[in-house]
Length: 119
Image (cartoon, rainbow, N blue to C red; front, side):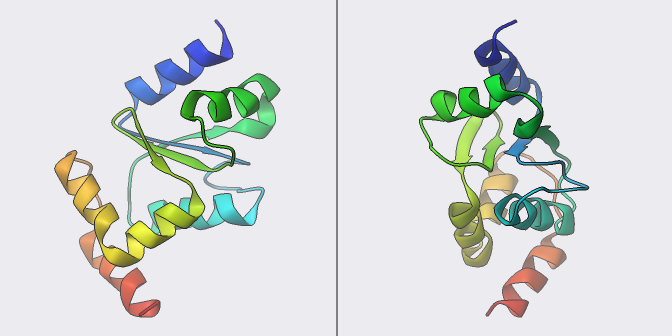
């Protein structure tokens, strides 16, 4: 299976996927840590893909999304964004809306707490 096939299968067979450096329990960079932290705090079930474990996937995800940086968040097979976009969407409430529209379970109170702490 090519890296592109592996990526496509991963994003289409999981509701939420985070391509990141490290894992959701042990992020290996600050940007990956921030996005994983938001998802973890909000109680979102998601698949994590450690791009450091496979150079093909590391470059392949950048080609797949036409986005140059990692982390990358996918919801229901669609690329949502990287760290800055996810941070902005969390603070504006857009991430809540996206999850709600796609039937992704999350803790609304936790999302509100993030916004309160950063308001």
